[in-house]
Length: 219
Length: 70
Image (cartoon, rainbow over all chains, first blue to last red; front, side, top):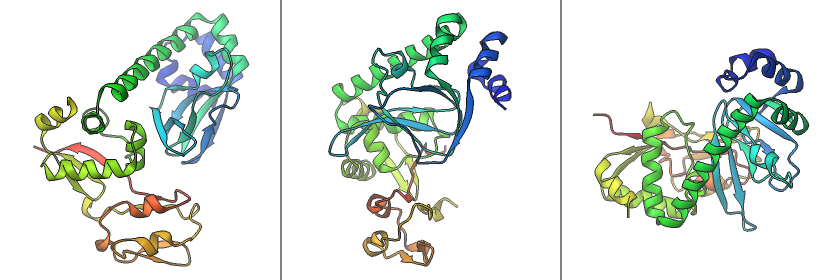
């Protein structure tokens, strides 16, 4: 089963046959239900996960329970690489499944072995690390440079443009993603609707006016 | 079909506390032996109050974002 997963996952296509064989020998597959906490922030980083199906999110939470979503991972993406590459080997965020997921689990010792001995694997991880860094830079800029209203407008545009197949976002998840609370998201959505920028139907947010939304997103 | 979308309820997570039923602003939910149920789906406005109140995360009212079709 691991062989099929490795050979059929686009993530691994760039790897040499030998590297794939090592991953196959040293990894195993696990299934988890939706809402399952895969990793806990602050716990020892013990494995790298490659998402074979489903969707997960990474978030940090403050002592009052307010969450900030750091990333949302889709099929093919490696999870927990930053924690494993860090010197203290501590999970940097909590990882929660958003749907039933299947992951390929590669223990830390084997992750390190592959990194040290197989340059194609190192390049693959480096590529994903750079992507992750770029996204975190974007997130830091979003949170520090734009007001909540602009962040929500940018987020809605991004979802509609880039992620139409997303599994859907609750108001709490939107709030956690743009660094605010649910009540503010609800109020801003009502404002946008009153201004004719969006239309809300059950479970649907339909964006009506791109120009005006972009204007909101830049304020 | 979109007009009839309802929040989803995961009965395996539901502890039947009844907060969603008692505080639904539209009285769209009733408690059954299995858990809360929408007996009259038309009453539900998809406001998300039930999702927000649910202490176990059993209720989910996801929003899907798209551009208006031309």
